[in-house]
Image (cartoon, rainbow, N blue to C red; front, top):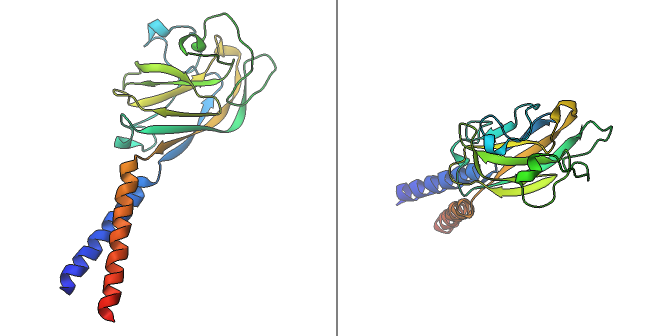
Length: 204
């Protein structure tokens, strides 16, 4: 009986602590250069707008340790941390950019709703860099769901001429665990508590 109880107790501990490690959101902070575009226009010619830009900042299944957790249906929370970027007009702003719009081609042409100049925008892409789904505004905060077929999140700035941009911003990307992970954690902790109480009652 004691042997069985010990096995159950050890199993409960393993379940609790393994789910705890899974439940802790993976989060990383990356630097997005003010000259970066949010996707590669050579790979995505139908989304072409500007050739004079750096490659986007990429975060995904093979970047920064997200691994298999970067999968369809999981959610990412993206937040501005620090830094300023300039669209080359002598104006500096955070990830929300400058409240100024222009009719020239820019990433915002492919994103629903109003978008500011030099605002952080993003898209999901497959392992080749081909856009998956619809590009979206990030700004200082965004919560997005990873679509099927995506292996990376790409981030860059909304501008039609990145060559004269300067500075950049730090963005934090956190993987939000699924509700099932929290449920497993509670089950594991519940088993640990139950077995501890049972051992105490047996001792009395």
